[in-house]
Length: 198
Image (tube, rainbow, N blue to C red; front, top):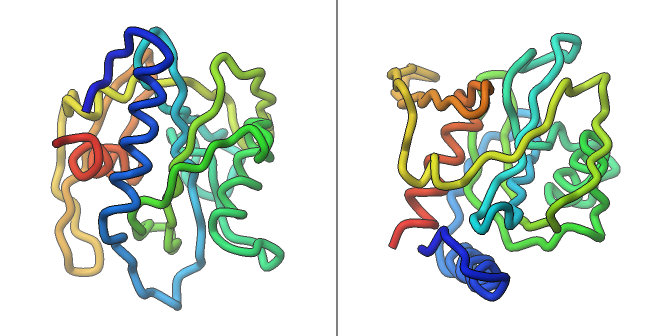
């Protein structure tokens, strides 16, 4: 897939192709009713003529994933109609992006978190630049990382981690002083392999 844009038409083509590929593939669904449902939002924008993804860094005050880089997202509330509603609500609460400003492209795979969450991954796009409003109780930063670093798998190391008797490879990326690893890096690497590559 083309990750370099000569103009906005190329970016729109990129978003359309992502939507089509998400629609065509079989979603990996995980049945884990004992785990708490949660959802994250993978948000793209056209920055410097290439797609970037919005990421956040959590504070040391939050209950889980202290100081880690993550997507906007969180635990599903009983009032949320579905996991998309969760992802949109959490995105607005954490970084101030209004749901009406998010162009939803589709749903990517489900993942398990070692913190006991069953995570749904939603994909969308937002205008750039965007006037973020960071919730300082939850986040100490948000930033936009080029999608190509995950497409090209420019991680500086990987490790094998065993969870519930199954082995998984954990990737570590560095971008602009931020360390991206754990579930966030796993989701982005999988997305690049399963959606972005021809």
